Length: 201
Ligand SMILES: C[S@@+](CC[C@H](N)C(=O)[O-])C[C@H]1O[C@@H](n2cnc3c(N)ncnc32)[C@H](O)[C@@H]1O
Image (tube, rainbow, N blue to C red; front, side, top):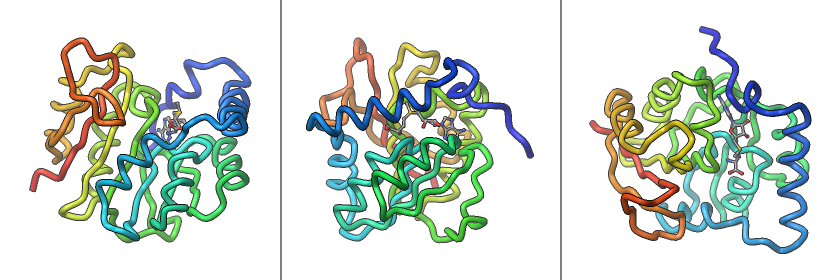
């Protein structure tokens, strides 16, 4: 089944991918802390876990998780970002792919994951209406005890309550909600949500 174009392509200006790659390269060169999401995921999984970086962009999170000894697969729909990930963070298996139609077996990756990290507003950049299919794919790709960690700004059209509803339809349940990747508690005025989803079965 073909899926509509992600908002990453339809709602951004030409040159946006190049700008995004350079932005993160500059921050890395300046010594900015780009590892917050990876630190939380690393704290939650056994050593040498198998982790999917879903909507990995230019690779900062999967790259760090690989450095920490995990087996990382990164998937992104934007080939320019995957090329940057291959260049800047060698080691993980970086794949161009759409989270809506996710077929990792075609890329040689048919084992389930201990964790999926979907950080940096990925769920508000997929095509509108495809979020349930993305979440169903997460449920299908997780080991029974695995989890998906999803982070996004709550003022961009997707509310945490709506995420919870869609998760139920996808065979997932909301386990924990935080306001930040460094584990600040969720509160009603938070502008960001980090949600840990687990398989409902
Ligand atoms: C703001 S970037 C975040 C990148 C990375 N997760 C990070 O935090 O550095 C949003 C990413 O979502 C990806 N994306 C959007 N829709 C997608 C889809 N349907 N399938 C795969 N990736 C998608 C974009 O290509 C882009 O890399």
